[in-house]
Length: 343
Image (cartoon, rainbow, N blue to C red; front, side, top):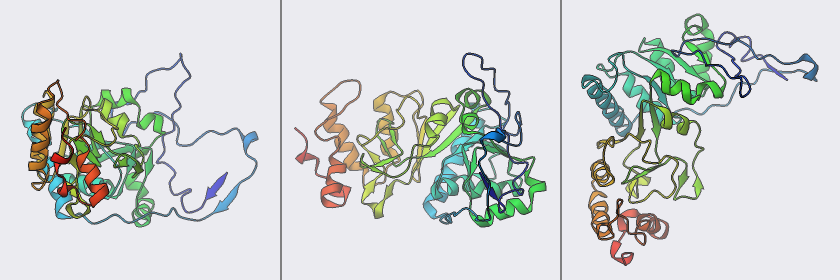
């Protein structure tokens, strides 16, 4: 067992450890809002299982987040405008929704931009991992409380939390992942999930883990738990990456982590693709609108080629991955010539 002087006893009071009973004797998890505490502030361990205690004072190694840029700021504003519009139209409760956010500099920047929107009400967070932006928003009074299973923050941010524990101890809760990611709790308390896509295809399927379907960019984490069970599930991404050589909106995702059945909206710096209640072809029109202008003609050409193959979802399988193949061969999806692939 490790006893880390950097974290303990400074972190005492943040944790809420609740163990779910074994099947078939499980009882309801009594969480109705993110700030609820239903367990113990420590983990119970049988003393006979402890062979020794190792003392250290090594802090976690954390990478600094990239500063928000014009693209992430615009995406954040688009998310805010979309949620405010939904609230005005009565599609989400007037009390707003609990927010969940994915991991990474992009997600951190988007949540920060969302928190600084003057039209978004103060909100609570129910998520898997908390980053720097929510901590700052808590200090500003924009985030009322936050529940997660871990902190992925910079050392400076973590030290600030420890130095101000009287402020954070009743606002910040850390739980086991089987509670923070519990499908029943997520569905019941009303969560809006905000996760990052590597790519989305024109029919609403999302790849959040693998580059060109093979190279692991990151794990799926808890995004599936939240996407499948949220009141409203949103994916955000910049419309391009690698200096414009890769489009984030493609004809067919090279790997699928989240099917179109659970993806409500995809948001880029070019706007919102609201996919709710739409058929496959209507979803395609929505998603092409939020693609980068350099790629919109190419995506429309693909849709035109695929149309002759009919079916409920139009696809020309020989050309479905033409953009990916062109990138692998030539280094730039913009060089795609669909005529090479259409048969």
